[in-house]
Length: 115
Image 1: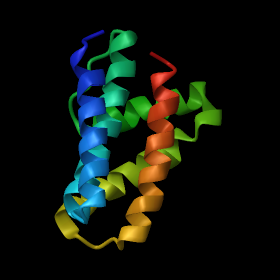
Image 2: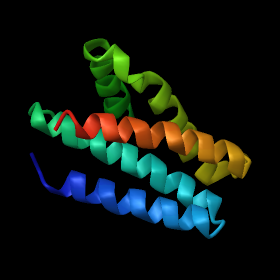
Image 3: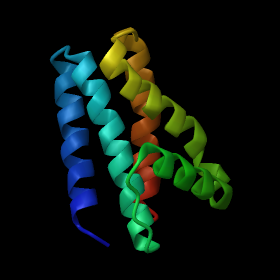
């Protein structure tokens, strides 16, 4: 497994929380997406799979969801992707971002357990 993905996951997660606390919800949204994407890439790497495009990440999460339905990864993926969209659209109230971020952070914790 490449060590870069877990390191980026931690960096993006820390950055996201800091940006959220500062009220920079647009940037925080993107960092939460980035943290989620990086942990998914880390899990994929443990299986010898390299993910690049969003489509690859989505398909891999769908596979993981079948293996681990108890982790609710499909919901986390949808919320992480909406946070990514929010980076471009700035349409989510900060309360929604907070709720989505909680779901994403829980999924990141669960995915860390698969490493």
